[in-house]
Image 1 (cartoon, rainbow, N blue to C red):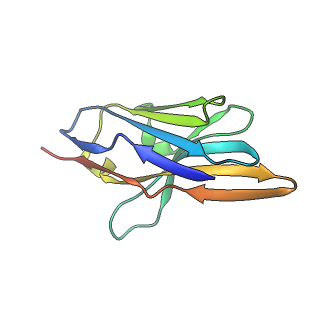
Image 2: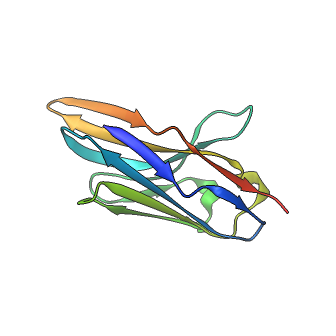
Length: 118
């Protein structure tokens, strides 16, 4: 499956952004989709994921500021980010887990930059 993100950009602290991700060329069933991020010099960390049972999982640092949603039919996932802080600055990556037979294949997008700065 190919994963493509869009919607990053620059915003002032307290602002909002919406990230979008589309999974295409899938031969199996997309079971999990969501978002990770990586700031310079840090490890990639989970931001939010929607699992196959449509249960959203959020990292603690989200603290109610972000909301993830998923369109199963369109194989898309969205991340509404509000009350952005400078520490949210990172490259945001979309992750899709595809079930093909008994295997679960993980695909990542190339990432989209989010910069929060005054």
